[in-house]
Amino acid sequence: MLKRLLQCVREYKTPTILTLIFIVLEAIIECLIPFLTSDLINRFGEDGVEMNSLLKIGLLLVLLAILSLGCGGIAGFTCAKASAGFAKNLRRDLFYKVQDYSFENIDKFSSSSLVTRMTTDVTNVQHAFMMIIRIAVRAPLMLIFSVIMAFYMGGFLAMAFVVVIPVLVFGLLLVARKAMPAFRRVFKKYDRLNESIEENVRAMRVVKGFSREEYEKEKFGIAAEDIRKDFTRAERLVALNSPLMQFCVYFNMIFVLSVGAYLIVRDGGSVLGVGDISAMLTYGMQILMQLMMISMIYVMLTMSGESMKRIVEVLEEVPTLKSPADPVTEVCDGSVDFNNVNFKYSARAKRNSLSDIDLHIKSGMTVGIIGGTGSGKTSFVQLIPRLYDVTEGSVCVGGVDVRKYDVEVLRGSVAMVLQKNLLFSGTIKENLRWGNENATDEEIEEACRLAQAHDFVQSFPEGYDTYIEQGGTNVSGGQKQRLCIARALLKKPKILILDDSTSAVDTKTDAMIRAGFKKFIPETTKIIIAQRIASVQDADMIIVMDNGAISAVGTHEELLSTSEIYREVYEQQTNGGDDDE
Image (cartoon, rainbow, N blue to C red):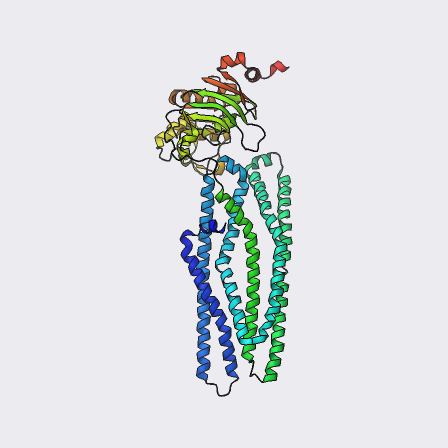
């Protein structure tokens, strides 16, 4: 896990190494200063001491203090640069990895969990990295150096640390161990909290439409309160570190001062001097502070350990869909063949989403798909651009199994327009160029005319340079659908899939869009999922789906006489349900 994460350091190795070097230097200097201070204090008590020697020691102390400050400052700068760069690379690797995921991979983690991992978890790991290259190096070094110097200067007086250190270590580890389960629970609750926020923001119009603001506030408040309780419980335990630390510090001070003073009085300063006691107090404080730092590192690393695991899970997840070793790099036409296809979204699923699909669509055909909710229409079309792989059988495009194509080549030849269309923040022109980044203004206008979008775009004061808010909130549902159709047309695909993507436009505009398709893109295979019979009745082939299987196939006239489902839907839509009265 650590090896995988450290790969994200990359170009920030130099500031990382410099941080380690300057931290080591700072630790050495910090441990030398009390030793020289002790010597300076002891010399003041000597008879006939020369001022020059005192000045030399004083100047040396000043110089060491400046060097320590400089080393600490440089280490702080390089540490900040290294940790921020590490976090940047980590987020980049996570984002790039998710871009390669199939829908199955995304479904495994959920979008809210992925957001938490790229934000909260990365921040935790960044803080851990910063502590590792700075405090986690400085604290052990200072601890070791201070213990050595304390025994060197104080002799058996340093035995106080033999008592204090185990007590402090045991207490800190016990506190950390008790606090960790609460910290671990918080991360999973963060996922649920983010999911609630994401759901609420996306469905804000529904929330306001049903006046459910208070309910959503209460739901969010419960989730936030749950996290607060866990954090409070953990922080309450961690807060015990402070009184434990204070106890050890004052015990050390009382022991050193009382025993040290007794030895000075008894031996007249021949064994132990005032400066030595001063140094012992300083080293004692350093030892205990470094133990405190180590306990903080332990808590932080244990907290971030959960974040590390969650991040590495994303980085090591293998995309379920990828291009083969020697892929086909050209789609010759828009023909589509389903050969005895069975499909389910998960290996754990008990039943298939699609069963026994055997269908052949010639290039350039217009195919309509009709069926009730949950009949498998969307699952059917998602197999064509290989958003999912079939469980059994095969799907062929242009006579080649879709699993043999380079994924980008295949998806570049298939354009999908979904019912829940998404526009990105930016101008209309920038949104349309998602279909073809090199499209000229003339090509953009032509695609919009075909999608019946040109007139309403021209009605905007800034035309094609009109700014679209995030999610397309400043255009209507029908306008959004037509812009998404135009965007898909700019790809000049061999297969165009409309997944109920004209549901928000009126029947006249819908008919004009289909007429334009028939006239201007006759060689493109057009697959239209619709709820309205009028949207598909002129198709070359209409597929009626029911419960994940093909119930009937034929033209409009054929299905009226052979398919009960089709006839029932047609009669309801044309007669307005009068037969039921």
